Image (cartoon, rainbow, N blue to C red; front, side, top):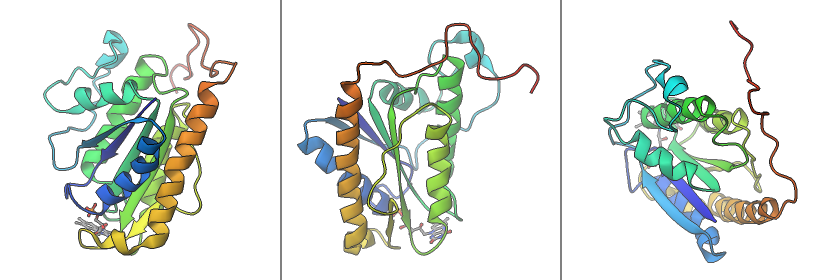
Length: 210
Ligand SMILES: Cc1cc2nc3c(=O)[nH]c(=O)nc-3n(C[C@H](O)[C@H](O)[C@H](O)COP(=O)(O)O)c2cc1C
């Protein structure tokens, strides 16, 4: 099984990276193929609301001049995705928001591409606003028919300068447990005798005109 971790911080060797790596470690030890992807500080545009992905239905965004499609193909090929962001004015970074919006719309336009995948969110924060960052990332999972594992407390680590969260022992214990929960859940649902419930062919999730 494969898990992809995406870092939305432009500070590529900062606190979010440490939290994501602490979550990936138990998964690698349990035999998962892990891939760590940096999007913070890179060229990734927000959704342009052109609606073309509903016409092309090729699992891609028609705007191909940035890193979105390359990253999203890796997400679509994985059983689990972990999104990580620092807290920027109590929300995710602009790069993470751009990824969330396009990933979510491409998945819907192509018939629930994220359904049944595992999603987890981790947040780096100096002092306040992390729960809102956590919520923003979980919103993608919650409306995309994904499955969310819990952990021992909140998936957030405290620190300001790069490396500070390494001193937040409780956060690192939580991340280790989160990785272990993803492993447990992934193995449990992989062996499920029933397929994940998705919409029937031709059935749509939205009411026309609303
Ligand atoms: C533009 C900007 C906005 C920030 N806003 C907040 C905030 O609202 N609350 C907070 O506690 N920390 C805030 N911070 C601090 C970062 O969340 C904190 O330093 C975090 O550890 C950075 O993670 P990173 O090293 O992965 O980039 C902000 C930092 C920047 C650069």
